[in-house]
Image 1: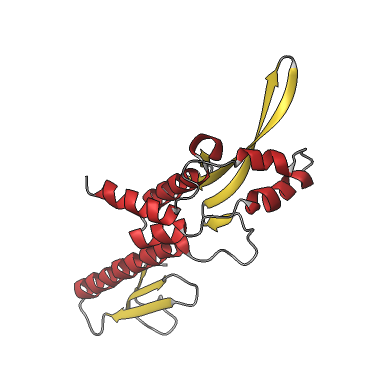
Image 2: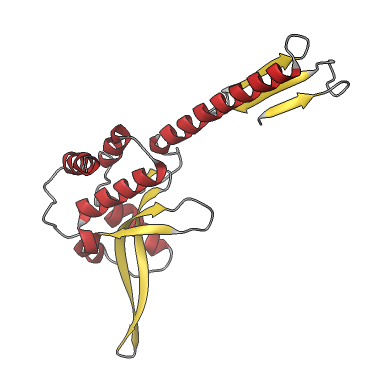
Length: 212
């Protein structure tokens, strides 16, 4: 809700003036304020009401932004890192030499804002495990304008490879795909930066980028 004006005879209790109402963040943080024309002129009540509404709207947006890195929902799988950021195994069907073959591609997905806009995939086979995750987190933070602290928090949530060889592999098998742990593990193979902490490496890279 936002600003509502009640004229003569439109409010059950006889109130005349502006009412500001908005939920900020969680559902139990419901706020409302009244600006009566008995206390203020129409112009003053109008100005105060819309000023307060803009203030609360800004607070709501900040809470929404902060919640982008909140803990996963209770029923979400271990592949869900944050709202719109997840580990995934892509499926590609290709025809070669007259036959069809299914290829599995472990990756990290960043959901584009807006309904039906799809995802941005960062493949482990292209970037390596750590760097694919780091690039996904950086893109996610840029899209949602997150802080450096939130960026570091997300880097620290990098999922174990067991999420791919366990939870996500089981999901593939349940859908009837023929995949093995060895096959998925080979796609997650060792990379040059495997031993480097993504949190330390990513934070340094992002801060250096901001300097230029």
